[in-house]
Length: 230
Image (cartoon, rainbow, N blue to C red; front, top):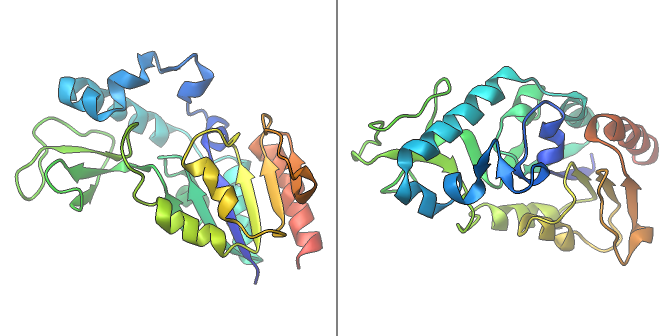
């Protein structure tokens, strides 16, 4: 089976009802990103940061995967699929995708503030002050905040290099370093971009654009992939 590597962004989760800060004038559910999603915010007000992510986690548990997520899972029947996602929700896993790399961490994991290698699943939706790791340090959301390194980027780049087909869904490729993953894909490898706001590329003749939302655009891409590459 051909290796299909998929990069997904906020657009695919937005169709399930999860808000994205870039769609609301730099605010995320009424908060400035600098106040809830940076190391400095954590130092200033841990209670606010934990409350913010508790609400995000609760909301993520209320929504369900959409058709875009489901199609990516279905493609595993015909391709060797690796999903690299910028999203921190678990909608890909819930839809049935078995190989998901979370670039920016997971909403449903916590990690030690003393040792970043101590990572724990979060049962339910709440993480509180006083929840500590095995070494007694406060737990924080296992999220890559703005200003932090993206530890899975090297792994993702290696996967992108191995792609025989590369697919971008629900991101306009403006968030770095994730947006640079398309540059690791081999020249001549078929590339598909499904997003209403897809930017222009110098080599557009090598990229197949589907300027639609993920759920409808992925129906078209699935049909094209099954016709051309099986």
